[in-house]
Length: 451
Image (cartoon, rainbow, N blue to C red; front, top):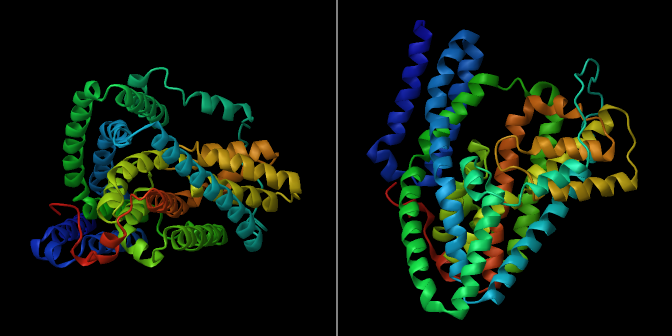
């Protein structure tokens, strides 16, 4: 290890110390600290990539990974205790099965509606940008096609035949389905014999309180984790990945921006009657963490905390919409991205798409939006299925793989923003959104407890 390694490591550690200084933590709002950490980490990573040898970068990345991915691991540690207990606790707060039906129907209808819009956006903006046109396709490694039956098999996997195994393997969708069954059964039993359910409710509420306390502790580490994640990624790739696929990246960013600002912003204005820019400010910690962690599930703990404490949505709405959205509401990963890669593949390989193929892309993309794995690069599997279903070369996935780490930041941030928007819209429709508290809060004083 040369002197350069120790100099850059010292710079990284110094930045961690600065972020941890009591005066800095007390004087800078939490969301701004996260944003500053993202810029500092990205700057360090780009500088290392641009000025140092590959060997030095390789020596430094394990240290960045220790901080960045160590933080992500702590977030993932919370997933298994958080998801089932928050869903069950949220359902137990419902008075009867009618409320359960209304909440579930409105949430899922909203998710599906925005997924349709997202897939159409991917097609339209991808066509306007002419993504894939002129891209060299010679010498591509062939990929094995996947048929539409894979979609059926994937949805079969959602059935929780063994909830314990699903938890051990972090298969979240079967765990969500199992939790919904438990919570629904508890709501039905509560309507028939409320006294018998009270001990169960007390146990769940007590456990949720412990998990929430642990969540607040982990969330307080967000600026340090973000610094490590950005330094790791940017020191590995710099900005070189944008050279050949810059137009594709810009198209994805544009589509995500339209989805966030126009689609979600329009729904918040028209259905919830709130200022969307105030919403973005309140939602910024979760949006920034989603951007850097590239995992809807990894962000789930902060997403639910943001819904309750910054968006002022009732806990039973947040505990239902948050976990369901983390596995079902994949507008960017399952809607925008597969649709745009389909356009990219058609342009790159000189294939003319017809009306039926466009319709098929939308249908399969919507299925993908409720089935994409909520983990980094989870959009890839359903993108391959979308391409093979429509009859497009799946090799296109390999063409865009070089910038997947970058577009995944925007995809995940869009997905989480959709979850946060849905919580406010659904909460408002059911009278579970505290509008006065939302409009009167001072964001400069807001941070997770103990941060």
